[in-house]
Image (cartoon, rainbow over all chains, first blue to last red; front, side, top):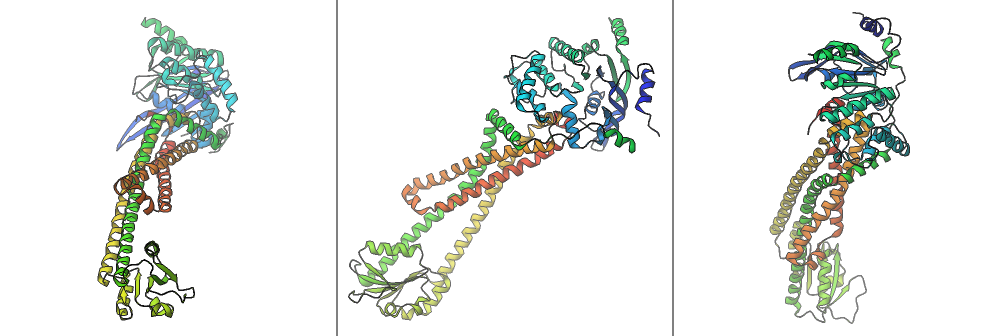
Length: 260
Length: 336
């Protein structure tokens, strides 16, 4: 069966008029992921296709167990699909070797996790410096840049603190600063507000939104936090491993209004 | 197929390979900040090596002490034999011929001199004005019965003291007609029995060393496995941030090398101190220090340190490789 081109699918989904204006930065094509548990095969994703455009705030929503974290891992190059393809900046990540994949994770993608995943023995500054060290930046340059990023997320005074000495919200800010270390094209945030209370969760959402607006970073989040809807440009609803529907911002606002 | 090559030819580059210096620095900082956890790993490695070293050096000290006691008994016995033949030893002179003399022989000559007797080596011209009270054949004396200088063989009484190997004992027993007195009190079958006992003791020691080596392997492998597996998430995080698998493995290998080295050195010190103190307390420190051969203990120490380092690396290499090969999603999802 001939595979439809990315352009064709895009035209199909969004119409011809804005196809030329927006650049696709992440593209998933018929992605399947089947987990083998003993003799039982559990499909987590059953053929998901979607495009994510440069500079947009995209939320992947769905109940837990729907496969959104799995999709998130595929998009981020953290796991390999059983079948189907994922393109980041038009590069098929299945074609990359270990060196190229590491380069991609280092330079093109910034990760923010639900559990923060900061290195507990390193200071905030060192945590933010780490991706730059991996990118081969000199430690002086890395230090200056990391200090700047921590200031950007509002933690300019906590450079020498270790993550366990900080609150959850502050740790997530450090993680956001770390995600931006190598000026990535995409920031992937997996349930960034999942371990935070309502207020700090809102602060993180606000921060992500600001990063998108001010720095033009593409933000992709997997979440079931409805607060995310307000800042998302588009929302992908995942249900039972398939892409249920993709909604634009303007449709969302009407719907949210209706619920209220 | 062609389409794929076009797609992957976009501007993706290879990740830089970081110099070893960065890995070492990161490791040292990790160990320093994780001091409590590092101490536990060190304790595991050190304990294993201390056990091995204690077993090895304990055996050595025990052997040395037994040998020392046997030597002293031997010297006493020889002196008693001499006395029974020539009376008091003070002022007496003896001719000596030796072949491959051992430590017991030199200790015997020293004791003889301490008793006030003079000994004359047969290589020197025999001083004619000395009245000789007898001649001594020492060491592997059996060939000496034929090859010693005539002056020695002619001297009366003639004594033979030496290493009682079963064969020599047999042959000397056959030639004993030529000796005024034989220095060996053990019969050939007794000598053979002693050799058998010695062999059995060696087997027993080898067995105990093998078991203690196993325990050491267990101790170290457990400590290193724990210290790596509990950081699977950290490994996953590092890979997300762009670390190469080889860098992650390098990081853990350097850490385990340092841990193995420091732990093994501490373990060796502990392991050698314990039997030294115990034997020193029982038999007196001076006796132990005279008996123990520190070169042998040094060799054991080197062996133990090498074993500690190698075991630590081998025990860390497996989980580190597993963790480095994991897809980041799986490493991040692991809860240890």
